[in-house]
Image 1 (cartoon, one colour):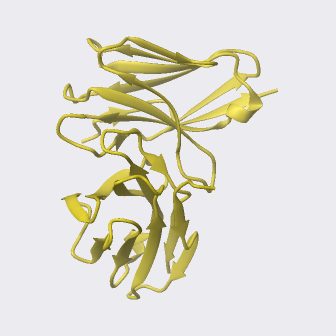
Image 2: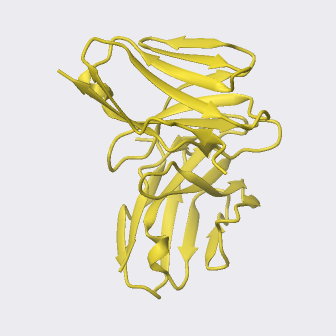
Length: 112
Length: 113
């Protein structure tokens, strides 16, 4: 399967802990996106990369959030000092420039 | 500020009938629209799209209609099948200035036997 993969699929953490998620895009895609989806809402844009450059960040991405794509391949999204409001599905997508975005299965984060 | 709206949170349709899912947008700069389908515990799957230079696009049982003057699009599924039961998201993008998709809140479609 050569689709977008995300790990872990589920993460339960206690408030105040740090968590890190990984996304592996479709191999030839140079753009990678992170979205967050909460219950009853559609996915909301967080940030995106073109190759290793982070080109846009949403206001939703507070200082506790950091994303990297060091070699222009996989990406990580880290949340520091998690809060209960961070509980959501974190979705990764990839695309070619100007192409359609293909989504991974998501990482469901639960902060207790 | 919800720039993409799906005002029907749910829809129930009998197998074999037509399903019509609606979407409205407010940002006139959007020039490309997509529908995604989402099953529980999976990521959204691309279904069909339409450029603002067209008013209709068909792909098998799925047709998307765009009415730019009304800032409205709709997805028609004919005939509806039980496997179509999922949450459908409308998304929009301004291809000239942005790469991010703006999504609606989704419509849960249930196709009954």
